[in-house]
Length: 521
Image (cartoon, rainbow, N blue to C red):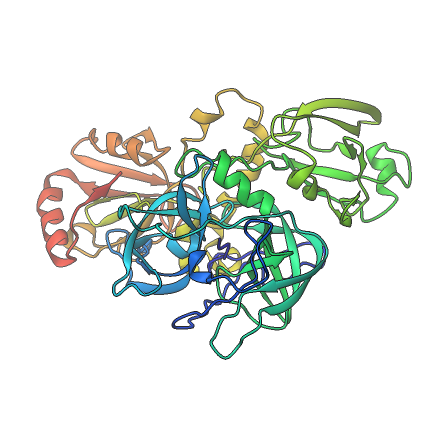
C-alpha cells in the first residue's frame, strides 16, 4: 500500500510533526529488488519469501488538466512506485497504491516478475482523503501465484523495511517511536500517523514490518524520520469503502484553539486553570458537529480528558492529539459523551462518532479525475473557482493568489458554520463562485483584454450562482446586448457584448485559439 502526497498539495503537522509530511519526493529506482521476512501462516520459518508474491512495480502516465486554459491538458508526466497485493472485504485480490500516484492517470502499468511486458491496470476505487487507491486487472490470470499481505496492529519498537537494491541483502532497520496526527490538506483531513525512525529513504509503497507482519506503509519523511499510515486506516478503506471516493474515516467535527492566556478563562466564563480546548469552528460533518457550537470549551471526549494542547493520555501511545482516538477507540456510529462549558454552564452532550465528508464549500477542494468546468462567450472565459485554479499561483497560493479569490476560500468557513445544521445543506452546497478568468483577444471584446479574475455577480439582470445559471442568463439578452456585472472592487463593474456579433466572433476565436469546444459543464 502506498500513501504519498503530491509535491504541490501542501500540508503541515501540528505539535512537532514533520513540516514535510505532504511533500513527497518520488524515488525512481529502476527495478526494485525486495527481500523480506514475512511470516504469512504463523508457522513459516524465517527464510526469505519471494517478495514478488506481495509487491510489484507500477508505472503511471499522469496528465493533469490545465486549469488556466481549461480546454487543454498539461504534458504527460511518468511516475514510478510500488503496489502491494491485498485482499478486499469481498475476498478479491487487488493492488493497493497511493491516490496521488494514480490521480489523473491515462495509463497505469504493473510488471510482474519474469513478465516480458507490463500489464495494464484499471482504477477500481480511490480515496483522496486517505490517499489510497485500489487497482484491478482485466487479465484473469494476473493474480495467480500472488499472495495478499497479512497485517497486524503496530506497536512501539523495532521495525523492518524490504531491501530496495541488489547490493543490500538485509532489510532496512528502523524503529516505530510514537503515534502522532497529520493533516492531509487536499481534503482537510486529520489522520493518526505512526512515526518511524529510519536512516534510509525508502521508495513509495514501502511496507513496514514488525514480527513478520505488515503494520503500515511509509508516507514520506526526511532527516531520518518517516510517517507511516497505520493498519487500521488501510483496513477501513479495504472493507468499508463502497464508492469511487467514499471513505468511512471517523473524524473530528470541529476545529479548535488553545487559550494562550489564562485571563481568557474569565472571558469565556470557565473555571481558571481548567484543561480543555476552545471550539473555533464547527464542521458540517464529523464527531460533535451536531451538538457543538463555536465558543464551547471542550474538556472531555468520552472518558478522555483533553489538555490545553488538545492531547489525551492514551493507554498505548502516551500523550497524543485526541484525533488518535478515531484509530481504535472510537468507531463510526458509536455513541460518545462530550463534556464542555457553554456560556458559563457545564454541559454533557451525547453524540455519535461521525465520519469525514466533503461538503459545504462554495470553493471545492482539489478536484481529481474530472475536467475543469468552463464557458466561453465572445472570448470571455468563465470558470468556477476551485483550489485547482488557485494553485495556478503555485504552492504558496494562499499568499500569492489574488486577494479577492483567496477571501472566498476563507469565507467558506463562516458559510459552513452558518449552514452546518441545516437539513438542506446538499442544496446549499451546489452554489459556486463564477469568475471571469481571462479574455481571449478579438475585435468583439476590445477594451476588455486585460481583465482577469473578476467575480461575476449578475448576467442580464439575473444572479449567477454557478455556470449553469450563467448559461441560462445568457439566453435572455437585454435590448440586443449581454450585460455581465462583477462584484464591487473589480477593475470594471460590468462588460457589454453585442449579441448579433457573437456568432462570428466565436467562430474566429475558436479557430485562432484552437479551442475544441466552448463549454464544459
